[in-house]
Length: 69
Image 1 (cartoon, rainbow, N blue to C red):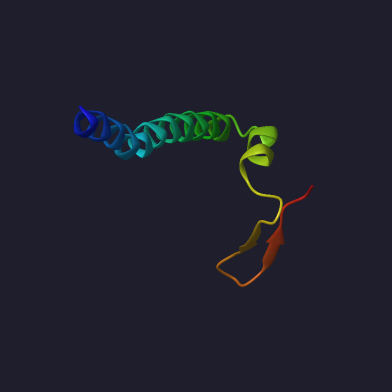
Image 2: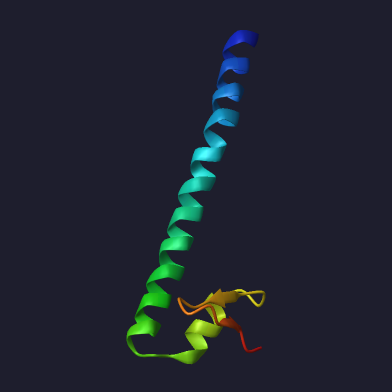
């Protein structure tokens, strides 16, 4: 009986990260969909929400751009 309980508990612990990854995947998919929808409308507020405040972008010509807070 102890072995059965231990195996069941161990299985739950091993599967916990799988469920967490599924939640992360759905959340990230929703955020990406929101961003792409906003990008098609050129919505500045969506871009501002998506990109980190620490964003530094280097263009192909070497110019540095930082996110406007």
